Length: 187
Image (cartoon, rainbow, N blue to C red; front, side, top):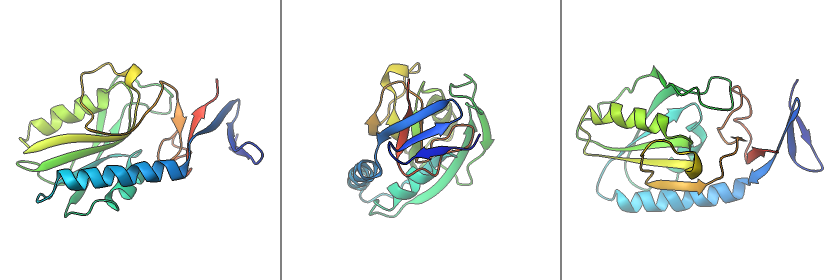
């Protein structure tokens, strides 16, 4: 069944599930501007490589990079750990390798959401084999109560509860990434 947007309440209805507004577009953009300023300050005099994790982080990375006021490069990983489900499968599959050499480079991994930390742990292990100068993680959303792996997130947009969210790059069965705001599954 296609999505239905209820004009009176701004809900997203997907079959039997209802998603309600959680983070409005303006709040997201304001926080991204702040993150861009902090990252710019932290990397003055350097040329970091921003590595987005596809597909979810593409919108966040695009908006973040507009707020970075230093030279930088961009590349992407593509991973799979959810498939079409609302919870992680517990296994990460690398679907797209990097095109750049990260040896001796300052790396900023850009994620849409850190849930268990499994994907970040996978990426850290992969990147560290290539001896980068540094590696930090920037995530729009972090679910602190869901973390199962000891990973450090250096730049956090928002800490959120352990609830399923869609919009602004976040999907449900590959849909709803194009929503400008973030919606949470109503319980």
